[in-house]
Amino acid sequence: MKVEHANIFVLSAVHVFRKELDIHMSRESLSRKESPVPSLPISIVLGITGSMRGQVVYSMDLSFADEITKKMIPNKLPTERKRWINSAVGEIGNMVTGQASIKLAGQDQRIHLTPPAVFTGRDLQVDFLEVPTVCLRLLSEMGILEINIGLLDSEEAS
Image (tube, rainbow, N blue to C red; front, top):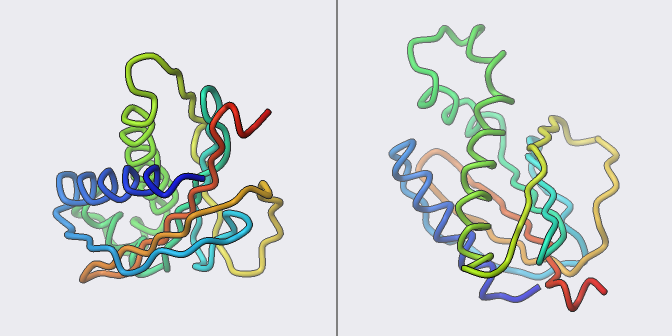
């Protein structure tokens, strides 16, 4: 996993959150780990195939997910909004990854995304790919977004 790929995800996340939700994000930290296992209780998992392959896993806490949903689907009561959280955060993950994948692919490569899968809870057992991962934590006034990027170029994946 190249760190310059991580910068593309940071720029994409900052742009999508500002443009779509009017939430300003700044980078809090960057670290490396062995797989894209998330640390916060709500996770959005997208698979990537094509000229790169791997997984991108976004995670956040419930209050941040609720704030995202409130901005995406206004005028809902909290009980109604709760039913829409997975859809809202899944769509945001899809938008950030989609924008990043366009930049990563450039003009002559193809990158395909799987639909987002949203998982809620701390004690879930999910098998993530064992790929070197860059973990980014972005901070906003509403909470933390963790982005775990485990990608291999086609040469590395062979």
